[in-house]
Image (cartoon, rainbow, N blue to C red; front, side, top):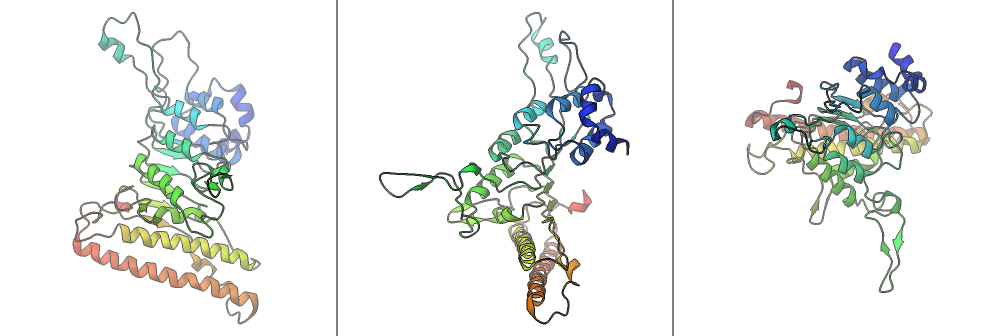
Length: 370
């Protein structure tokens, strides 16, 4: 209740208590950011307020001041709703990048100057939430930022738009006097819906997987429209290779955040079913790519078993049950198609379990043993 009230009054607190915020216990400060994401201002925490929360006021003449000394155990940063609004990636980089200091002229020795090196404001970040960004959030800037946080183990990109290098150029073309018009960006208006071409999105995700090699938990809730990019393969090109990339990943959350009721229209049911189908196809693809091949060889048993957390269509088994005609019958039949897909994934999963048991787990262990 106290943290909820603090988050609700954040506009007041960040102004009148700014000199005291950094002295709160580390656990309270980390949790307060999560409350601000839910109960705070729409634009989020704000960069200046975030700095006040992380770093106590210091004397500018204090040459021995280390911005990271207050946050040695500050490992979790929840910027849900703030990233891309009140906190930019450039500003976020300042919090995790080691600050540079000009060599001190009066240092007695090189060793003495070296010992005075500074740590970043957040020196040991492992958990980061960038969920609920604006539609203009930049994937290229995320990729640039990711280079500064190789220690991340938990990341949330829930509600992020389709990965694109030029998201505002979907419908833009360049005229040429030597031939037909050329698409300006790597993705056009029909790339995903008609052509099923996730070439650009898959390439971006591959770069992210290469940079954040140690991820153990990835939240992609409400990203159903681009889940195919996680297992896309084109002519001579591939996206993420699940046998090689993210070998430590244990949990992948891909919930659609969609819900149905007895009053739902057919189009809503179709949208939900397509989202669930995308989740099932992804889960099946990961099973195949991480399938052990006699315990060795390329892709043979590399990486942990991934727990793909997805929607459970069984919660809607009671909807339109017994309908024999009309739109309700169509909606029921559409939902029933999920059962066949889920059955196929379960069968494949059982086969994988049997093969892993026969071959041994290669020393990797199970996700829940971590």
